[in-house]
Every structure is written in structure tokens, then in C-alpha cells.
Length: 376
Ligand SMILES: Cc1ncc(COP(=O)(O)O)c(C=O)c1O
Image 1 (cartoon, rainbow, N blue to C red):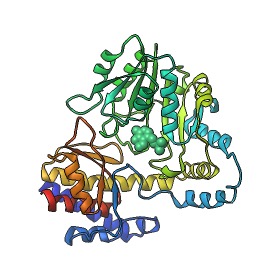
Image 2: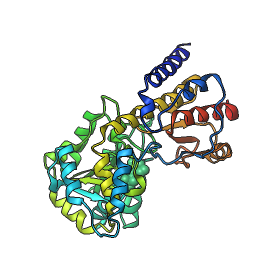
Image 3: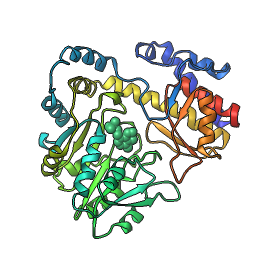
Image 4: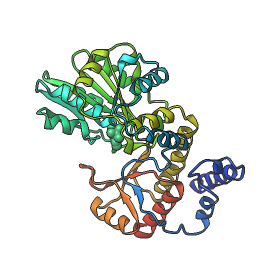
């Protein structure tokens, strides 16, 4: 009953905003359709719903698109505006410029860091499951990967990770919020962990979903970089809330010695279009706020549905959910794809759980309606 009330409240709120013309002024805003969806069935959209890759359905912003169009005129040129972009990020994050490097996506930052940690062999400690790029790359470079299962609440288990560290461990990877499980690491426990572990080895903090977090227990670890800790790397990306995943811009923040080492090893080549898009987008707070707000609406649809249906899920701190489907994910995703919805792949050991990336509210209404129709 309560859930129904909450649901109505949410829908009414959406209609009020739309009525006031606030949402209508922003591209991709939900219209009155959202309200209608509570009454009528949501029609299958003509597009495939990409609830599979944690992409931002609203990006790039109009401001970023304008910058892209202008920058295309310079696409005959090598190079870009890396110094300007670094200077902007330095101001936004209050981190000195020599503590910042730009990568072709944060993926490149993850890879070069994995390379640095693997050059002399040894091991890397990583949660399990987590975002695989860094452990995979380090494994390919010859490191042994020590995987530490999440705890019974599906949170990254810092105590177990600490216990798993060996004398030959060169780096600990922490993804916060984690992916595919959108849980966060409690800030004080994380600080205790980093204070201790970073004395002797690298700690990599992947904050790809940082901008989506709205949880008082979360804190960025950027101040370790500001305070010149020589062993902490923080990564951020323009691929998520900024919605420019295809343009490949990401950032590494670390001590200048580490930044210099990373810069020597990077193999990507930034392009002027992506850099201008990021430069514009990071200054476009309206778009970031909008994307955050819409993400919350979509999450409330999916999580509200799970509450109503008694489906287990991990409360999300990012732009995706993680929900227990009760069947092998291959079966679930094939059935969903048949209805026009792509969901995430299997994430062992949770092979009956689906990672569902938030798309527009009306798409998530269609997702929950489809779920109910197929499995309800
Ligand atoms: C946790 C995490 N880190 C890093 C990345 C890499 O993103 P990009 O290389 O686009 O910056 C992703 C992409 O999904 C991610 O989920």
C-alpha cells in the first residue's frame, strides 16, 4: 500500500514538473507519457533498449554537441587541447595540474596502471566480482590476480581484501561504486584501509560512477591525491554522466611521479573532438544535474518494481541496478532481448542476477512491464 502511495507521489511529481515546463525544456525529458504509462500499457519502443552497458541515454549534452560540431572543423589536425582540459580539471577538482593525466577513456588509465603494477611481477588484489579491465590487463601482463569475493551483503569486503594482500602484492584495485554490483564502500572504513595499504603498495580507486552517488556513506578519495600520497590513483571518466563514451576521454589523478610514469606508457591518442566535448560538458552543470535526476527516476521505477514483486536487488549508487532473476541470466537475457531489451551479461558467481542499466523512465516502465508479463 505504501509502495503504491510512493509510486503515485513519484508520478504526480513528474507531471507537476512537466506541467511547469521544466522538463520539457531539456532534451530527452519524460513527458506526460510517463504519467500515462501508469494507466495504459507502455508500447514497445521502436528502438532496442540498451540496458546493458551503463551508458547515459541523454548524452552528449547539447552544449557538448555544439562543441563537437565546432571541433569537427579542426579534425584535419593532430593534437588537441589537453593542457586546457587539464587546467579545467585542476580547477574543478582542486588538484594541481601535474597530478592529472588524460586517457582515451578511463580504460587507458586502468590499463597503464595495471601495467605499472605488473612490471616486476607479483600480485594484484581485486574484489570479485568487479569491473574486469584492470585485473584482466594485469593478468595479461603476468601478475597473479587474487580475487576476493564480496561479503554476504554483496559489498566489497575490505577485511578480506586486507587479509588477501601478500608481500608481493603491488596494487589493490577498489571500484567505488562497484560494477556490476552498484554498492559503495563506507568512507571511514575505506580511509582506514587506504591509510594502511598505501604505505607499501599502490591503491587504485576507480570512481567511474562518482557523479551518480547520493549516499552520505560515500566519499571520493581525491584528497589522497591532493595531499600528495605517492601510491593512490583515482580514475574518473567522461563516459558515464557526461554521456560521451564513444569519444574516449577519462582522467587519472595521482602523484606527479606516477602521472609521469603513466604518461610514458600510454598508447592511446586523444582526439580534438572528444577533448572539446569533455571541456564543454564538465562545465555544463545543468546537464549533469538533469542526467542525475533522470537516473534517480529510472532507478525508482525499477527498484519500486522489485520491492513490489519481492525481487532481491542491491540498492543502487550508480546508473545501473543489480537484481536477482531466479534463473540463469542467459535465459533471462534471451527472453528480454526477444522483447527488445538488452541487459548485462552474466557476472559470475552471480549468474542468476541481471545488471540492468538505467535508460529513460519510459524505457524502464517498459522493462518492468515486460518483466511482469514474462516472469511475474
Ligand atoms: C567501473 C568502471 N571503470 C572504468 C570504466 C571504463 O570506462 P571508460 O574507458 O569509457 O572511461 C567503466 C566502463 O564501463 C567502468 O564501469
